[in-house]
Image 1 (cartoon, rainbow, N blue to C red):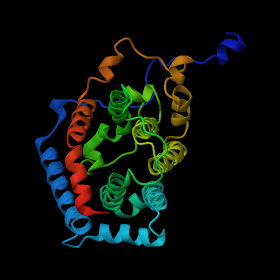
Image 2 (tube, rainbow, N blue to C red; image 1 turned 90 degrees about the horizontal axis):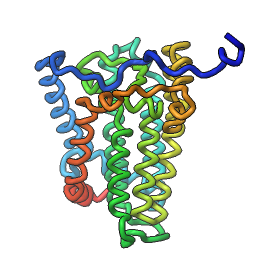
Image 3 (cartoon, rainbow, N blue to C red; image 1 turned 120 degrees about the vertical axis):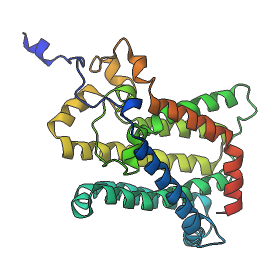
Length: 306
């Protein structure tokens, strides 16, 4: 072969990475899912008592109040503070995962990771809901025909990118032993960092709908954190998988469809089958449920008054 032919990108004939979102009903154990839903119930109940309910322990209200005091009530600054603290805890614990798992085990570390991340994420989400119309009004497109439909479509599509963790929900909950994965199929063919892409889409949609300084500052903070997450996620995968990740990196892209368009990633003829799987269907169901539950979520946030 000529040197130029040897240097040309080779389409992915066989996946180097794992088959993402693969789900076999026959392989599922009733006992595992019983444990999962039991753990989910216990964790959510504990989160409600210790962090959320102001009439019980209510540490979440104290946490938010401390930031409001620190930033003299400036909503944009408080929101950036919430994002910074969540990001430092979430990514910091992810970075320490290899060492932490050696000390206390994979399942115990995953539980500790969740017990730190969930309360901080809840505070950030509820604060955004309560203050989304704060700040300085900049523009208002809500009355423009078609904008609501466009926002809905982009927001819905964003969740198909935002939650790749559903590929192994039993590992996320530490029912199965958690592992770091090298995914390549499904959404990963489009972008190696679907969560970043989904977050950009979500932020664009919400900035389109809510044209004020608070939403824009929140979106910039979220996007900046997810851009950092691209670098951090690649570093963690390279540290674990070495040359296998380097090969995968060359066959995939950060920007959506870039690797497909330049021939580094080959999309199979039956690509739709990589999407017609249980985890993606679950994301669709949960996303529709979340949309229909928006009034309940808003009432809950107003009740907390964070």
